Amino acid sequence: MLALEVQTRDSKESPDTIRARGAVPAVVYGPKEPTQSIAVNAGVLEGIWRDAGETTVITLKGLEGDSAGGGSASGGKETLIRDVQVHPVTGKIMHMDFYALEKGKKIEIAVPLEFTGDAPAEKAGHVLVKALHEIEIEVAPAELPHSLEVDVSFLHEIGDHITASQIKLPPSASLITDAEESVVSVAGHVEEPVEEPKAEAAEGEAPAEGAAPAAEAPAKE
Image 1 (cartoon, helix red, strand yellow):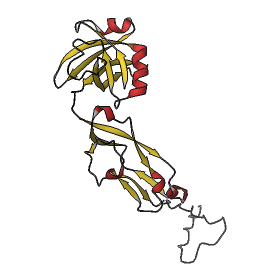
Image 2 (cartoon, one colour):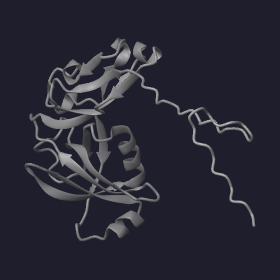
Image 3 (cartoon, helix red, strand yellow):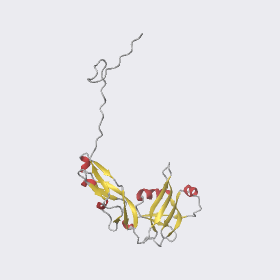
Image 4 (cartoon, helix red, strand yellow):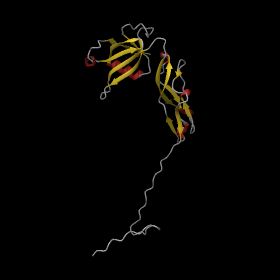
């Protein structure tokens, strides 16, 4: 788990003022948590966002009453990143939402899939069709995976496939996505027919048998 120092702030303070001092305005909320307005060092937050994404538990330190509820043993509030607003030009984080976890409660979350291995089917010229890029699970926060591996090295022939139920989950996790839903499958490579350009009759060459003769040009008077 990652830890992040935050500062509580006045919700009436202008976001532009917060950003001007090198911080990012953010909020923390949860099912049993009052919404708190916070500010986080922009440089530190950028690094956390790159490492954590939305599937890593982040312990926020410096919150009001952070020893209660979903606090960790070392103090702080265990959270997940739920929403990020990014500047469309600079790509810098403009605002972030943190979701406070309930102690002892599992969470429902969509976890990205990471495809690993080399599929013999691809080497044979077939195509891998990746139907899903994430699956939804319910899991204890302590066992929340950053991603789930899908080993495609078992795919050999057309029709071979991997379903959601075949993906290895953490011990505390249960699958929410339909167990029989296809994650990746092998399909045959279909080549589009290439149309041959029609050959035009050379000048002076007789038209093909059965073809109508060309009309004669009218005589000049």
